[in-house]
Image 1 (cartoon, one colour):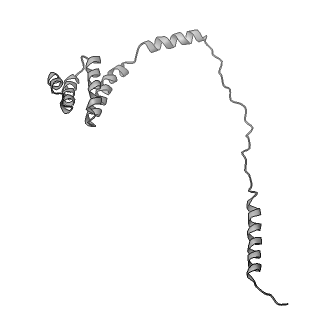
Image 2: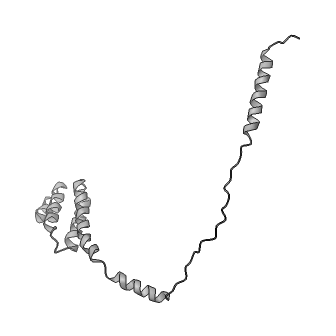
Image 3: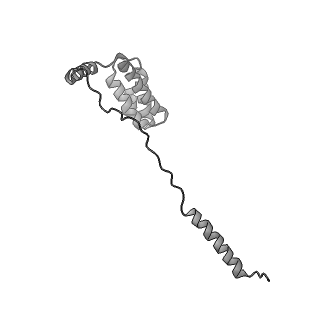
Length: 134
């Protein structure tokens, strides 16, 4: 028997070979998560005290701000204004310096705030406002 290789036979063989590969790929294994048998987590805990008493105690605690917060607030305000000044955002730094000067009248950073406020005005070419703050 004589074997002849023709382009048609070769094409048919390649077609059958690719078709067999596509059938194997068309049905991939689907992996799904399996639930774990765990007891449910309690969502609400019963209160030992009446809710009115708890709310009253929270109101009393929140009426007095901690001393650390009030002491650091002026420093944070001035540092924020100084940060805007160093980034050359003078138009944004002006209201922050003004807020610092209005809200914290007895703080030691007032001289620096006035000077920086004057510098902001000077850099924005607002000479008359700059003169009043220097």
